[in-house]
Image (cartoon, rainbow, N blue to C red; front, side, top):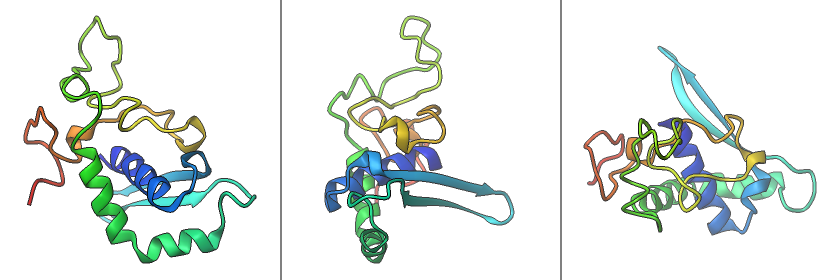
Length: 138
């Protein structure tokens, strides 16, 4: 769930702030009994990624989170994307749920986990909602 949420957040930040998604990297922290978190940081040392720019993003993080969750509810490849079944032998995408290049798959350089184990349906309700999302409709 956190990995999918991080990808939505990277996309939101890149669209809202003008950062190329390839210059934003993610790190996920999941420590039971301590807490959970997502860290976004710049992966380049040139003008495409500056600390000052990311600090400004942090000041408006609530807006970026809201945008990320709204974007995650609908993919340009829905309903096909939302209805993907990882166990389907014909599709051969065993490590993805509702995830494709239209919604969750981001640059290789941004993702430590090699873009595996992604599913929008774990984060937000999709058109094929199964009622398992962490952030439900309010």
